[in-house]
Length: 506
RNA sequence: GGUCGGUUGGCCGAGUGGCUAGGCAGAGGUCUGCAAAACCUCGUACAGCAGUUCGAAUCUGCUACCGACCUCCA
Image (cartoon, rainbow, N blue to C red; front, side):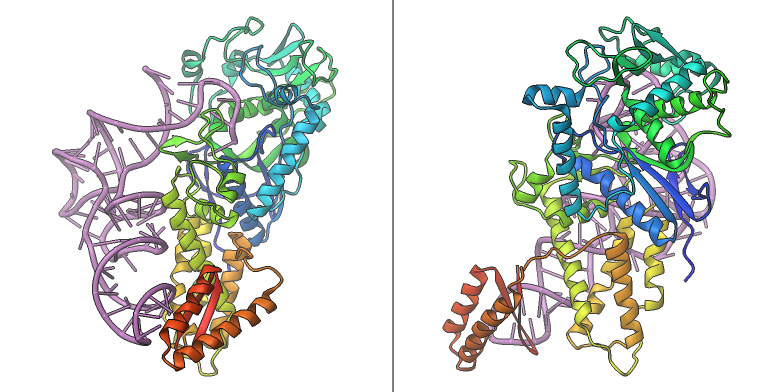
């Protein structure tokens, strides 16, 4: 089957564009990962799930994908002032542990929760602290190209110099005047020539525990530098897609573009680096929107975030119940990634019901037996994958793909009840579509409810059902209802159908 | 203040210049001892005002409200 062409919305051009990779057949994807100084929350889940679907979709479209998602374990400051403390170092100081202990602990936590939500591990997951040499080299090149200056052991990017020949603000749609008028006057910026200049290298203060030697001082790299350095190292100076949250658009991604462009102009034989050919950096920039709570962004700084652990255990005053990891994933996928998604218990509960109905139909589908006689289908199964793939290839419209799958549920259930028939060919296509779209691309899976004691449970419940059927045959409704109620109390729901009684674990 | 985006039925949430999104909740029905599940049917919503058009919720303008970024944030 011919795959529909992939179009994605490019923040750089503010329009949907046909995806054309730098190297045909290959796709390079870089996504800003977490700063590992706190437990992952719902906000972290959105880009992880969004770009996980992109990763899966690209693979389904037969690209060889290299997906790089970094771990920020150094350089991310509390604020832009010189007094700003490194997030990791601060946490380490407060908890009196090694910075690397903090980083490792929260990296593991991040992995644990993302795994549970069906987020595939990226191809490469580089740490900022493991690429200090690359970052120092990048600073050298930017200095060499004349777009940075040293002050007091720190190195700053010269925004005005850069803006004279380039559009600083090309991604965020700003110009230097906007940035200038909006930028705050912060204390301790004496070293900077211009308020909008940003740090490439910071000299470490005596109490700063994370530090590396450099030509300028013993210090640490600026936050924006890591993504430039690591994306270039693993994907090349020119690569396909750069993703991240919308809140990183400015300044983080804008600075990345400036750094890449500036470094590419360094052609001085003195430093030995060759000028880059063509425009550096990502060709397509993709940004997921924020998750909101009561209409406001859910974020660390606002203190209104709910951690994923709280979601999975129900342990938050904002939650009326626990939600399984797959329900969270489904909740995210039910909205388009560029829309804000508003959190509420009502919305989560609706998502949970919908998710369960979809999963149940998927499981029922696996048990359906084909009929020898071929009857006409209410909908053509020949097109089902295409019907899902077309919206997915149109800037990853996951809600429409899900709607398409939902439209098959009544058909599946009708067949399962024996009220309609399906030929082997139709059934195979239907199963394949659910497996491919729902499983492989959207990454949803039934939440394993029962453990390994299914045979035992089957036997016990079967026995109870037999007893109840005997009571029913004797029209002893009181007895039959007692059995049903007792089972219900254990979380086992009985359903009387035409072909006898079936049951399921809630 | 600057830049950008949003306002869709009870809730969440897609989308398009004219043709049913979907989910959840709700109503009626089929089935059933009852119930649940399942299936069938039902809501004609697109902030307000004006304009373009044969026709706009979809395009344009204005107004109102909300939000994001401009400082760390996914």
